[in-house]
Length: 380
Ligand SMILES: Cc1ncc(COP(=O)(O)O)c(C=O)c1O
Image 1 (cartoon, rainbow, N blue to C red):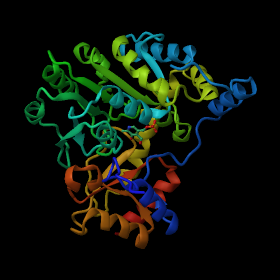
Image 2: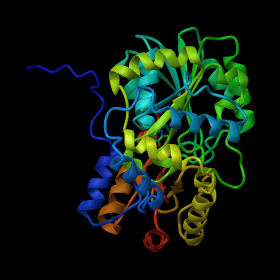
Image 3: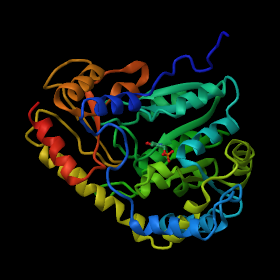
Image 4: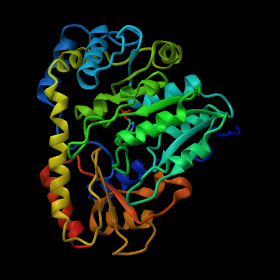
């Protein structure tokens, strides 16, 4: 049977490749973005209790109301803004499903979607599957600053959606208030939807406030704000997240959601609804990860790698141009095989595989893992 792939350019992701290479070579794995420590025992106990109490069948389609109410209260507390729990919040199977569903609900053939590169890898295939066209804005290392004039030039009457991600994986940059105001100005008076991937909203450093799209009234009315409990509570394997949007946009989202997953993990939702009652569970996260970033970078200060400290996410980009001008994919493989440390080459997130001699390292690891990793990196 001939198989005419709808995604001819998609192969095995670099995350799978590098993690497999790390396992094969017994290397320290700082490639994939997940913590190597346990999530809070209290949260695990809450899930166990929910299962023992019988919450093991389908949850309501948009998620349990208690959890949607808790999320609504969180928006009030953090951003002084409101999303109605009954009509403007949906619980999803991780941020990935929320992103896929937003794109599927709105993108038609030949619609253009603007994304900023380096970009997380799930946006483009979703756009392509729906017949849309990705229009990329390539940001340049080491500062990855957005040139808003370039963005303005790329917006036209075919532009249906803009995707932003702040704090940004993989670069570790954050959008400032000024960036958000520039974006708001560009979108004013258009029908362009904003997909704001904010999965790292609670991992932001040096006292910078997170500039959520919901803080800007003209952005909020066109935005889907997407979040991930996996990133926030150290349990990426549970795959529970959510998204929020004004009622009319959310109604369209739910039409796709109900035939895509219908609903998501019930006992985990029960547990999260209770766990969220204590805001310290997410408010302490920035400090926790900032200590890890600082430890990682202080141990690398005498290495040959150059860096600008990550402003958010649990990723740090390291520039190796003082070591070699080898292509980043080759260098990342060489580090894994010969030096037993795995990272992700940044070119895979860039337009046309642009190689800027930089690698991405995940520092969501125990201090012991970070110490061992830097001992290796210092010898290179
Ligand atoms: C920027 C970004 N968005 C979305 C996701 C996916 O989140 P989830 O695991 O909740 O699907 C990730 C995971 O790495 C990410 O880095």
